[in-house]
Length: 375
Image 1 (cartoon, rainbow, N blue to C red):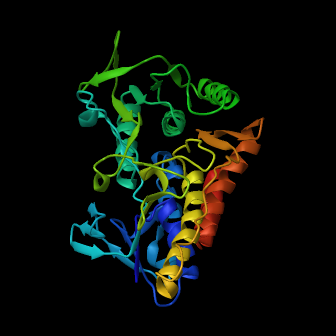
Image 2 (spheres, rainbow, N blue to C red; image 1 turned 45 degrees about the vertical axis):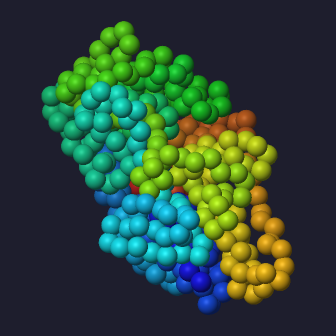
């Protein structure tokens, strides 16, 4: 019996650690990721201004996984009929699998945007954004961020803070095609985020639909915006292994009887019929439900498959505890209807990242991240 977890992001690592404790000894557990380390991605923007934060937000998988076999490889395709994973270094058969590969940056075939826009999904992306931002600081130039979701907001805030620290006269502009920043979130949160961006000196342009880019300008419907550095956070797509699609899964997160999709790799509709936002909080909670279900199925198959009906599976329900974003040295958080900014929100932001690191066994890194967040 082999259980395979594809991806070691928020969903994958949470799922793997739970399965390590839950699965019967006769079941093999394999974790596949193209990196040998887990990345706390919601803190990645911090690396743009504070490169040393990279050490706190990367966790070697061998340090936090005990029982699982870690295979460092790229997942290229998934044959669900044959229950076979195609990797860049071979193939892997499975009895049960969970696709936890996360999402990639979507460029929507906009001319020039993928060529010139810098994404922010990995550490090397953060270093490239930092280099471009430092060049803009030297030139007292212009930085444009495409997309004002949480990633775009946090990147814009960090870029503005970097320019201020370097005493550079840099114009930071964030472009959003919809009517507000953080458009997928509650209105009170949107308003507080907009205020924080204004206070940070970030120019916000909403109703600004990007149609393309050149080496020097971002093209909009009605005008062009010149730039020295261009960062693109304008959307997400599914992983290559799923044909760049994000398939819809229901509350049990099943693609089929033997395969689950967890986290940003899928569009999850929970047990109440609500669309679940692509977020770390959702991915972690989905993984907890899927761990229970995979263990239940494995034990049923090993013990008495054919002698009883398949076990009833738990259904995932997402109840957002709140939302949080940093904007340079400020932060915005919501808990229920209340909105927090300043020191209180910064403390909450630090607690979220440190809490995740602690939950996966990286206590020392949790401490380092708190210091970096509150520095």
